[in-house]
Length: 44
Image (cartoon, rainbow, N blue to C red; front, side):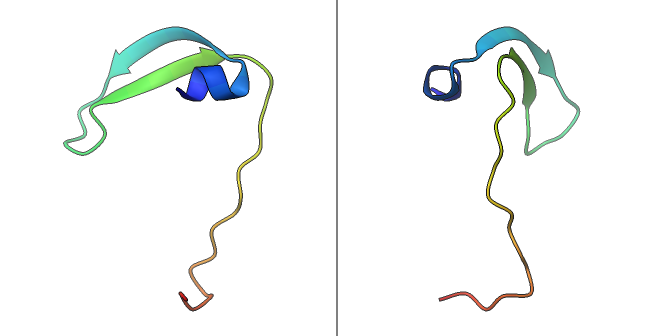
């Protein structure tokens, strides 16, 4: 899904030792930016 939305190619999937994040996906493609999350702002 993320690859299709951003025009990326999936290069590999790497296992992690994290119980929450099971794998790390490595993509190749144009750099994208994400909205910054600020913990100091109250939630609505």
